[in-house]
Structures are given as structure tokens and as C-alpha cells.
Picture 1: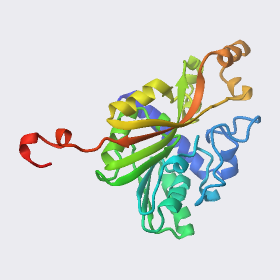
Picture 2: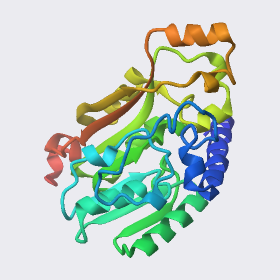
Picture 3: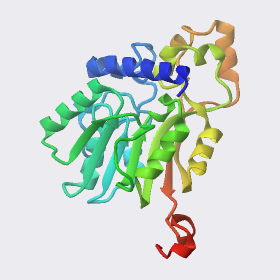
Picture 4: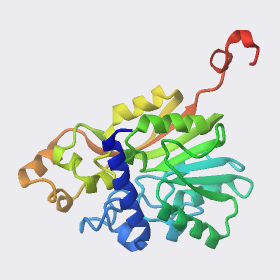
Length: 284
């Protein structure tokens, strides 16, 4: 890991540790939880969970950019892993889908988030939802564990996204799949936004090009890659004015492409005789 990658991780750890200690109303009024940064919108990124079974208001910090659990095709009895689980919101929605016979693991980088999620699970009386602190570039779970992996607006915060997709493939069962909501770019962000750590922790300038994002998934060996949902993210002028002058704002708003929330589905490549072991070994 480079010094710059480590520095970015520490920025995220500190920022989301602070967010975990804020009340939900403060987070909901912010740009992906990064601070009270706009009067023009209630929340820039997040989608509405209210119609989903299992939704827990206390666990919703307004940090997401999609509804991956809605698209994740979770079945009763499945083992589900949520990467970047925060206060537990997507875990509890997944638990409603997988039921008491299933198992849900939440993994988060920040100790304060893990503590908050555990408290929420205890309050709800969920014994089959477990939270573990860890880096999703090195997920603290065994191989071939999960039927489904979900994640909501988290991978854009991770410097080594390639490592994360490789780890997702490792922990999925051969028949497993993922559904991930994330922020991607089409075209380039102004350098002033890219370099601001506050925007990085606010989910925007840590994003990469959509084509590169999908290529990383393919390179990790996933198949049947499907774009389940895509929506543009409109950053209000009162946020942009913190980083750009009037002319730069107009140029940014008029450029082709922009910032998008995407929800991507993909399946782990099935194990075959050709890729599980040498043919002469007879192990397959």
C-alpha cells in the first residue's frame, strides 16, 4: 500500500468515525454524510428505504447511493455479506429477505460504526446478524462463505478497488453473486474537486470512470455483469461554489457525462475442471 493510499484510508476512517457519532438528522442533511453541505436538497445520494422490509430508521445514516438489497435476489436461508455496513441498515434489510434461517455479516472499517451496528442489532433482537471490523481489501471472512454480497456507496472510498473485487470473489460461493451500488464517473471531474478530501469522504472524488469500474469486475472473473440501475447525481451549486468559481461551475455542469449512481449485479464464475485444478489430478 502506498503512503497516499494509507492517508486516504485514514481520512475515511476519521470522517466516518465522526459520522457514526452524529445523529441521523445531521447525516441525512449532508452530502453522503460528509457534513451539512447543502440547503438545496435533503440528501444528494441516498435512495428511499421506507418501502423495504427490515428497514430500521436508527440504522439509516443517509450514507448510501442506491438500494442494492432491493436488487440482490436474496433468498430464504442465504448467507449475505454487506461490505461497509455502517450502522447496519442494509444488513437488516437483507435479514428480512434471508429470514431467521439465514445469516448476515456486516463488515466495516470503523470501530464506532461497528459498535453502533451491534447496538442496533441487539435492540432489534437479531441473533443471526453479525458485525466484524475489517478492511474490505482484506475481508475478515472465510472463502466460499456467501451466497450474496451487497455494498452501498463504499467501494468508491477504497483506494484499491481491484483488491476488493478479488476479495468479493473469494468469499462468494461458486453459485454466488453480488449487487453493489456505487458512485462512478463519465468524463473527468475538475481537479479542484478531486483533490479535496472532504469531497473524497463525501463519495464523489473517490469515484472512478464507469468503464474502468465495470472492467475491474470483469477482470476479477465475474460473469453476467448487469447494470441494474443508473441515475445521475446532481451536485447543487451551493456545494460546488465551495470548490469552483462561477465560470468553472458552468463548465462543469455543461460538460458531457457527469457523476452517476449505479447498481451493478454480477455472478461468480462457476468452478470447472479447467480452472479448479490440473486435469491430471482427478480432483474434479
